[in-house]
Length: 82
Image (tube, rainbow, N blue to C red):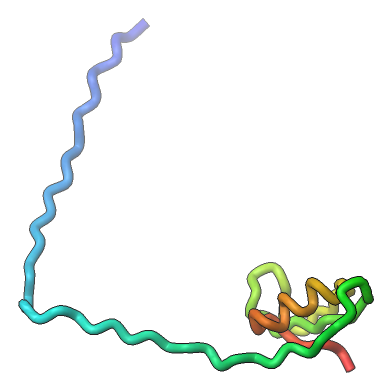
């Protein structure tokens, strides 16, 4: 059996440059408040996805409870089917 050679340790050399002494100003964008209709938490609703959420393709229809539908609407993942 061959002897294993010891691995060389890799080192990361990073030099940081401070281009300006002024503190950076962060801009925060606020989402518009979405009005969520009061739904029956135990009732079943059909929800149409707009493709914002990664596991919900655009235009797909989901049968969800009212509780889930309110969460999806509040986060802007789609709308209720009419």
